Amino acid sequence: MKTILLLFFSLFVLSGCKPEAASLPDRLAQAYGVEHFTQVKSIEYVFHVQKGEKQVARHWKWYPKERRVELISPQGTVSYQQASDLTEKEQKMDARFVNDNYWLLFPFHAKWDRDNLLTYVEKDAVSPIAQQPTTKLTVQYKNDEGYTPGDAYDLYLSEKNEIVEWTYRKGGGKPTKTTTWEKVKDFNGIKIATLHQNAAGDFRLWFDGIVVE
Picture 1 (spheres, rainbow, N blue to C red):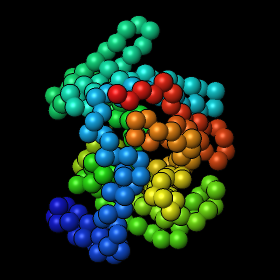
Picture 2 (cartoon, helix red, strand yellow):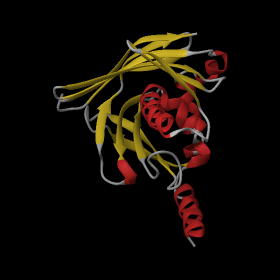
Picture 3 (cartoon, rainbow, N blue to C red):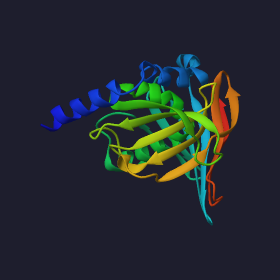
Picture 4 (tube, helix red, strand yellow):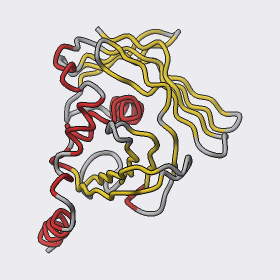
């Protein structure tokens, strides 16, 4: 019954959307250079997040073709192979990596994960922070997928299909966090928003040390 209801819900959502709902994730990914990703050997970056006085930093190097992840620290480098048989320690590290990598490359994940997503589009939406006219692309993970099943993201897009702001909704419920997408930089054709912050100014997330090979 659960499968039937999920299928019905998926069909209902998709049938209620305009035809562009299916293609907009592709255009979003293209706006950030997804076609160049096949040439990527590795991506190295430092993820920073500051909430009030608390600050966290994690230094990653990812080899997507090899499905290998490295966590680099002054104490040394720890690596693991992305697979279904991770140890408990590797699962915890992978959960952190997935979180940080989604902030880094979410436009690509919206395309890569499309089989696991419910997707719909709202024209003439207003962005929550800047209150500017945008197109809202909502993607929601299915209830049996990933570390946080059912999570939804409202992406507020410019005319160039680039993210201006986004809202994360844990479990698909009410807004959990809304931030900007700022300071987009080009790394060998891969465009990355290097700064995200909320309206109150008490949350800031940024990337540095980015190297794309």
